[in-house]
Image (cartoon, rainbow, N blue to C red; front, side, top):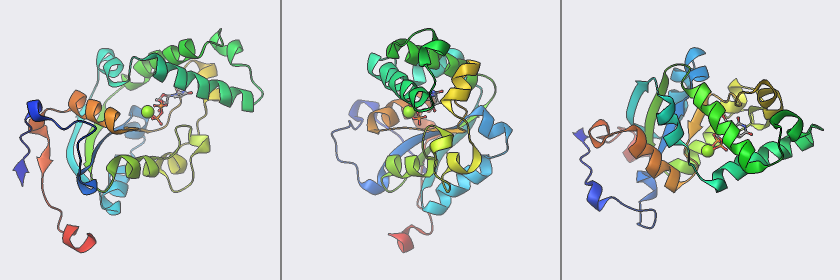
Length: 212
Ligand code: UDP
Ligand code: MG
């Protein structure tokens, strides 16, 4: 096993080829996952699928750290806001009655504020997972953002049932146990935001030569 020394100047960009088996993603077990004793089960699901944990630590994040983890972009806010509005509409509720606005960017900003409350409530478990198309594979294992929509067999679908209509009315975020990077850009940012190169390890799992 060797420490992975990363030369940040020659860091790969989203356009460089990364072998599918070497793809990396960032995962966070959120405070509700930790408090409910789900860390072991979650790690085990990744490991059993053939994904490799190459960095792992427990952290009590500050609000600033949480804010810098999520994008500060209008696109991200409006994406959150539009999904929230859609879900409210589907359930015959008016988003403006609870957010005081229909503006999707403002709704997204409010959700980010609540993420600041939620993720600083206690320690979280941060990790980097490496393996076959890790970003997509991990998102599939994690399941839909809204637990009520998450399929059984996924982490969110097996262990949670929260919805934005319940959560946002109570002025909090949807409790969904876990975070996983949504795409390569997020994975690159989040890995660098939570881990230093010295905390990332490179090793071969004993079943790799059998699996691939
Ligand atoms: N979130 C929420 N209400 C929403 C949308 C998102 O409370 O309508 C919270 C939820 O905890 C989610 C996080 O904001 O995990 C980040 O949202 P994103 O769309 O990135 O979902 P994820 O990538 O976590 O599935
Ligand atoms: Mg996301």
